[in-house]
Length: 447
Image (tube, rainbow, N blue to C red; front, side, top):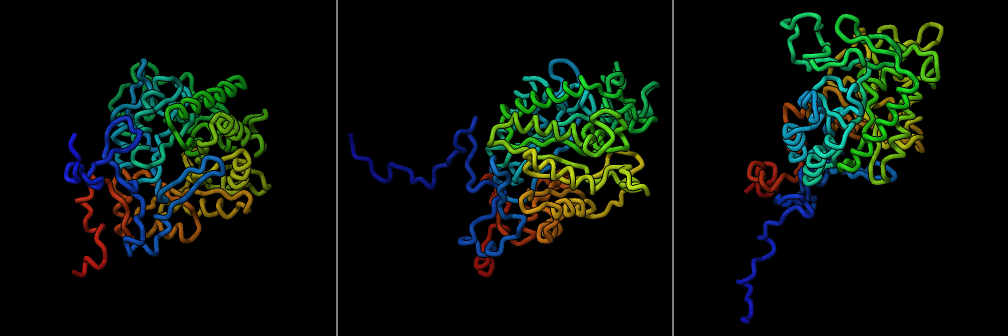
């Protein structure tokens, strides 16, 4: 056997390494895309914007975000409506969600996913009430993880806004009795006879189904469904699970006196109206292992024209003061982050839409925490450029920014914001040739 020479052995720096322990080969990018590169090698990173500083979330789970930019859940209305594939994610979802992970988002959250068939907003929404749906989630979570991003999912039930159509459908050409927004039983694959709510109050009598007031037995059934779906999400590989308590869906239906007029232990007082959401959070917290983080998305206000209280001091709608109380209770349960949004529970809402219009709610909730209660807060709502996002963090209004539509317009948002802020972040090795302008040292630009 002849002695091997150096020429016989390729240097380790020319070996195209793959991502370790991955289900398929993919070239390794170190550090992972979206991570700010070392200031020792890249002088422009010596004063790193907060937006590109890492953040660890959770006392137990210790979820590590490589930057402060996360992808909000976005309904795609792209699952099969009926049969064994109902609610099952498809290659569309893999490509849709995977592109954000490839391009540097710190966390990518799967769209609002229903724990029960009748909790879907539309018949084509995502579900997690069976194992087939969980099996379809696993390769998506695996792919997100391979890019160094955190795989996450939002679980919920749509309440009185379920059995509706995908938003782009033009119902003016459809024969009666199909109303605008309503997915009727039969051809539209709806379930208008099984829409649930805290009370029999429709979101809008003309365009939405009439819900049935949930029985106590159905509330227990719902909690069991959240437990089972949480277990499936964990087995599929989720590292963050978020409860959807926003936008006029079932949890926010129960929170608000506008939609909840029950007279039992789940209605009336603020304590009673918060009861279901806190019980569901407790169920989820007890179900997840310590390395999985529990988050909660909340509509901090429903923008009721008459305000949060009447002249007698009684709560008449859901707003920021009740939200502060709820968030403190959620912290006691073990929630690691509050994802602050607003609106969606009433067509009477009066929203003044402008850049960052929801940031003040995140700021108010964040500042309401004591040092012992303090957990990170995410903000959403018309955040459209890197400087604006950085200023929100610098002002202390939020710890994380969460985007949806801006990611749809610009999947490379993370890389583009890095360039906008004058710093260098890692990009996939496959894409580096397209980012030579960002990945050039100041001294090289002078030469």
